Length: 554
Ligand code: NAD
Image 1 (cartoon, rainbow, N blue to C red):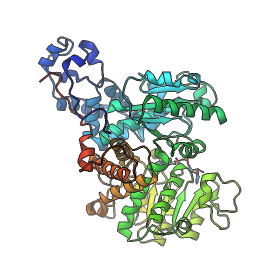
Image 2 (image 1 turned 90 degrees about the vertical axis):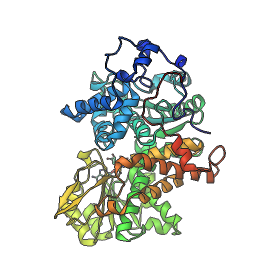
Image 3 (image 1 turned 135 degrees about the vertical axis):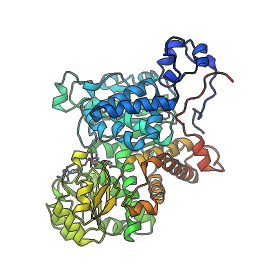
Image 4 (image 1 turned 180 degrees about the horizontal axis):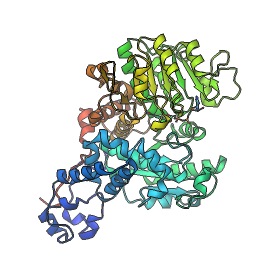
């Protein structure tokens, strides 16, 4: 099965709305770029200023305006308004300036945007499903007018490292789906952002007059499960073949929901599986430099979704290399807010148990490093500054090329900055970050740290799943995606300390990942239809290009 919206659907002029309705349809609007002939055909004369712009002129105007704005939240608002007017131009601007724009439409800016969502709210986007809609979610979903193939859904309980933001969490699915379209060319009409508003326990939001969500405490227990279940059934009923991505659910829901639906629906959790894949890719790249193997000790600061997701995929990758699962787990250690995760502790949540080793309790991260002598530390604690100068120096004493991944975001929550990582390890750190950092010069060497951003992975995996019509998303797909991503890191990248490819290559990266994920889906019997002769070409042909097309019949 192929995507329902071909790259350039053959639209006849009769299909299109006329006049203001055309200008107000963001999927069709071209603004001042409508040609004079189109203006005549569609009743647009006089509704637009006389100069016919090129797309380049329009993009240039947007960029100049953006660059004059004093802060990132304002830029976020302007970019959202652009998308609400003209999706094609929005995607053109994002694709051509991905380094500059991604941090504005996604992390770190989206974190602040979600915190202040009510203040900056202009017009709704996506579906808001609340506890008030129980029993009617199918009807509600039928209100969505587009043929959806991809849903990103959150319940807003753990937005980035910022905690419970309730319905304000909608900023996350909206941002993620923009990245799907920009990075992997998934047509925006196929993408549906959803927030499940089950209340919030954020006291500040509950009393904030600008808060957009229900003012009630979060549903828990069976009531919560019932609404998620109803949503899952409704989504699959209204949009057969839909891929559903869970996003920013709290630990206690995320692992459970993934477990519950992964074998019966086409779902994945990006915080767990996407993060794992991008981190594993970074490790593969780092090992190309150190010449080491995955079996060496890795110590995580944090033991939540990101940490255990990464740890599980690293274990799976080691098992795929022929190592026993027990041995693989022995090399992986976690530190949470109460110290080293060890068997003796009685307070451990289920998802940590697989990494609870026989060891006396250790409460301090630095002490754990000194005892375990890891080759790499991976920060996913959402606590800023926890990779102190002493932590970094100790890693540099223990390793010629210490692996230092400070993945927490937004930036204020990063375990250390790029500059700190290089300074305290004499420029020897193999560094990846969760937040964007500018290049760093240390000791006369210029380092280009790159973000271990999930956007290297999820757009490609999603495209691969949709393009092949895969019925399930498997961990093996994320392992394959990690290998493909790391294989695209060049020797020149590694030489400057970059463990990921340059972001402007993202569409090529997504296309290659999608092809390998599709190939795997066919191989495992999860895909529908005949295996294409040229999987890469087949996937590439389905990627939407952000270009205007003529609306005049030939
Ligand atoms: P989470 O809430 O599931 O887990 C956080 C973990 O950190 C918990 O186990 C908690 O016990 C532990 N922790 C809290 N304070 C600590 C402390 N002082 N010392 C040690 N551990 C402590 O969150 P998550 O989904 O695992 O995400 C964690 C962070 O990783 C967030 O900042 C998130 O934005 C970031 N993240 C980054 C990427 C990426 O860069 N690709 C992807 C996903 C998540």
